[in-house]
Image 1 (cartoon, one colour):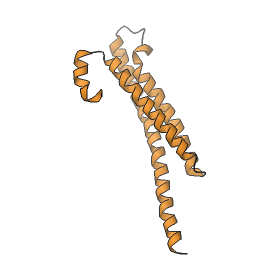
Image 2 (cartoon, helix red, strand yellow; image 1 turned 135 degrees about the vertical axis):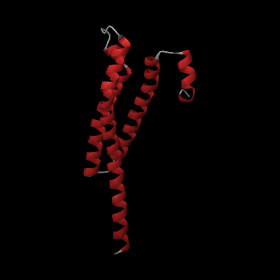
Image 3 (cartoon, helix red, strand yellow; image 1 turned 60 degrees about the horizontal axis):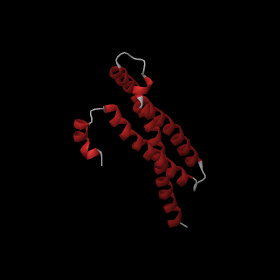
Image 4 (cartoon, helix red, strand yellow; image 1 turned 90 degrees about the horizontal axis):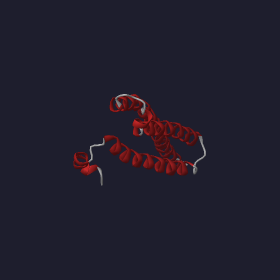
Amino acid sequence: MLAPQIKTLRAVWPLEDEITYNVAHWHMLACVAASAMFLLYLTEFCNRAMYISGWHLAVGGTVALAGAFVYQLSSMFVKGAVDLAAASSGLKKAVLPVLAVGLAVSFASFALFTLWLFYKHLTSGKRNQNP
C-alpha cells in the first residue's frame, strides 16, 4: 500500500532514511521467505543442480541482505560524520554494487535451476517417445 502513495508520503514525511528503512525491510523479509521456499523445493532433488543452485542462493542472498542492511541503516553507520546526510548518501552509493552482485548471484541461482529443469523436461520427453 505504500508504493502508490509514496509521493504523498514524502511530502508529509520528508525523512528519506525512514522511508528507505520501512520499504527495504519488507523487501528483505520477502527475499528471505522466497529463498526459504526455494531451498525447501530444492530438497526434493538430489543432484549437482541442487547443490550449485543452493550454494549460489545462500552466498548471493547473504551478500545481498548484508548490503541491504548497510544501505537501509546507513545513517547509523556514519554517526560520527560532520555532514550526516552526505556521509549516508556516500555509503549508500558505495554499497549498491555489493547489493547488485548479491542479487545477481541469487537470481542466477533461480535461472540455473530453471534451465536445468527445462533441460530435464526436454531430454525426458525424447526417452519416453523412443522406447
